Length: 139
Image 1 (tube, one colour):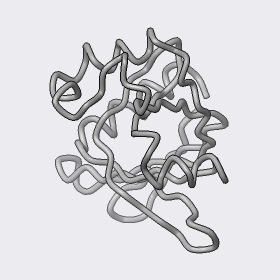
Image 2: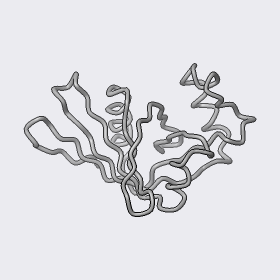
Image 3: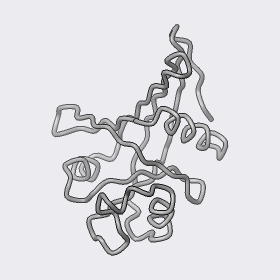
Image 4: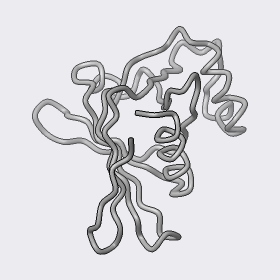
């Protein structure tokens, strides 16, 4: 995925405000809302906490589907298939999250918290769809 494509993905999901990450829980799908993402070193990053079931699911099978819908763009929506790769030792990326999202500290995200989990997206395959079902693949 090109740098421009990654920026377009991040802009889309930030404008939508909430995006959903679907994983597998055994052989059943599991989906939950997320709200924070950054680009660091040309990679799209996400955060969660290590104690959450989503971390266990990603560790077991890191292929995920991320979806967001932007009502302000006539209900355009994006589907991102990718693998999430743990990058827990990347304190610089964690610091960018903390600098970007003021409320993370209140939620327990601190550099000294071993529960602070970060992943970056790899092998990204992303498509934006409009209300009529037309699609545009991102490169």
